[in-house]
Image (cartoon, rainbow, N blue to C red):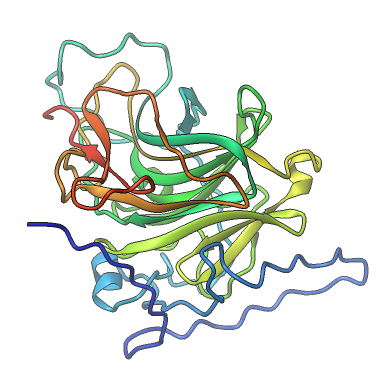
Length: 342
């Protein structure tokens, strides 16, 4: 049986959906002009307020309400909180581990674990493309991935990177399951950025909130498919989710030197403790050959080249595959896996 893959773009309010409070901020006489987002979202639609579930709702409740997100706490604050945890790109990882994950099982997972080097181990499955662009957007399935055996996190994301050889400047958006960052095992919206090859933090560290409805760290609906995007415009890197502009990273964070991307990556990621093999799900746990595996699709380069994806370096246990068995495509792929038995 084929898999029907559709967009959920309805943002109308429904019963049981919370109306967010208006957020106001003091304005200084000497304040810099407030950046204005593009008139259209990266996928060409006009922004409109997304549907929000009650504060504190879990991922299943958000999905049941037909909502796009829910505040992860009941404080009412629209100010994202900085969070720290391991983060990596192309084998360059942050090593930030302020929160200790659960201890791994006493029984070794396998004999072929990587050699210890004092850093978490990163596993990626996805695609990438080199080319000058203002950003990218894609449809990501949001999964209730199982995090097991002491692994730090599992996620899916878009990473827009600079053109220099080591891609030292990067902006990211996606969803993650990460108890040390989010406090639970639900999928949450996250943003992240790198400066001069140095990782910053999740959800803050220079990120400027714009939306009055949703912010990084909010709980997302498990099993849904949503649009995520990054676009440079008006001196900032804008972040889009579902039907809204969420906020931005200003060019000043990079001294005005990072205003155009030179490469983009779309991928899933699992991070395990140093020298311990992963046993968590990437995506929904199904390998890419399965038609029901997690997807990243309708990939687009904003004001960039025609999409022509190249596989990222392959890793054990997790796979990626273009979703072209039923309808030929160059912009949609499946990814995932379960790691080793815990």
